[in-house]
Image (cartoon, rainbow, N blue to C red; front, side):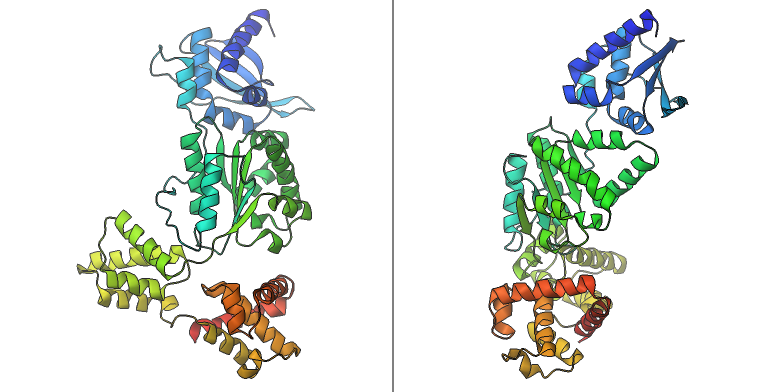
Length: 456
């Protein structure tokens, strides 16, 4: 590298270093090698396509402003990627020409204007997250984490069935953190996309860049962490990322469709770490919360529903928040297309056209009867003290399904099924969950029972 090029690049690095954190500078700029400057074009060598994409997405304005000051306006940037370090093979990339709007724009202003891509879903905030008894603990913990990330519950592990609002809540945390702590790097990502990125980093030999990127995050939010099950490579990478971030006081937030104790195919060392902070369950919304969710959705969309319509929907749609919101959209569509008011008659028609909502609500009595009928066991024997295998199976399966489908405490479930205590119900749910994970025949039996239950 000639002395003139060396001087140019050193002057650029001096400005860049003054405008970003030391960690970011070391991660993204320290290993760059300037190769040439000719015809107003600066060519730099980087180690991977991953780094190229990150620089273009997050630091191109800072780079362009720096070049304007050090070299002059109109300077173009090209990249040479060292594709094969052993044999010295390279690939050159000429990105689109970048221009600045004003020559007087300072480097600090340019750097601040290019915000880190958090991937957060902006519509999910605390303001439109409706609180009820089923999500109160999770909501309270989430707000504490947003206020003091890395200092309260770390990690925060939110779990619950699909559609109960886990994704909404963790995005609300990220959005609030960005408002209160704009200097922090917040990243929301699905477990599936994390897995894709990890696999891509291995295939393209960019694993070190992948790790450096994730270890530079201040608040890492992973949605549906259960999808890491059975993926030892991904789990190992996340294990080291988790350790690095936790050790450095960074916040980790995860969601799952089950609690840490119920995760199968996950390394024990990860499960142990998931339990370090707070594990909070979001249960299915009860009747009053379902009504409030509907009212919030209707108000947000600028609609007007009679109160009796809201009550009817809440009483007949009890699966998830997502289903409730879907019904509102369906009602609005029917109202618009048919040019008619939203009333009970229209609600009857819409819910009647959706087979999932045609049945009567599931009750604990229906659950016990469906399970007992399936296994051909006398329903009256369920409430006896019998320890016969087939009766115990009916009892435990009924408890599991009651916990899954009903807004009842474990104590109430135990009282209605065999007059058992809450510890017995918890044991039953764990036993059935283990069977579902390990016994293919039992999984098929459970599907058939649930089909009977839904059609009863």
